[in-house]
Length: 167
Image (cartoon, rainbow, N blue to C red; front, side, top):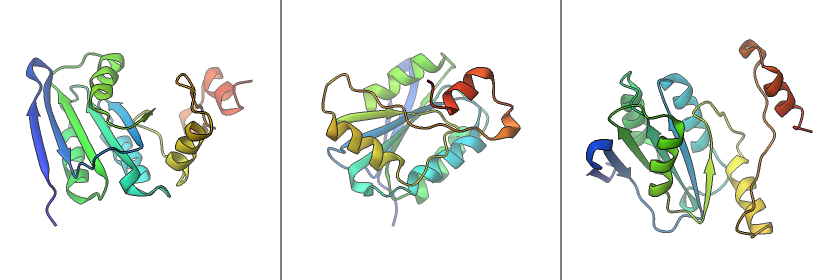
């Protein structure tokens, strides 16, 4: 069926749209994006293929003023996904911190999982993250999972350190 869409003007910042909103998700996956529509689409498809029930999480994306077709990718995804999904389109680029702050204000989950627009997650990614927080309910508990990079990216020394467990 048709998606339920609610659009809001967020003033000078831009606009936001909500699709298939569900009340009280356990977890919000939030990601800022800027001029990487192909990577973003792969990231969204991986988030759609999670083992956690779609009723338990939402996805919130902030387009940080891309002006390159990113909004078309977001709208096309919204039209087909079964996820609770919302996106914000900022009028101008303000950097990832500003985009994350706008996104955090839209998250409704008890736990917020912030990822990059180029993260292709395993199917248990969201479920495992939520379970970690349920097992460690401290307010300031944070989770960093295993990260690997394709060799074609030519990982930097930091990326190699992170891939090896950051120890």
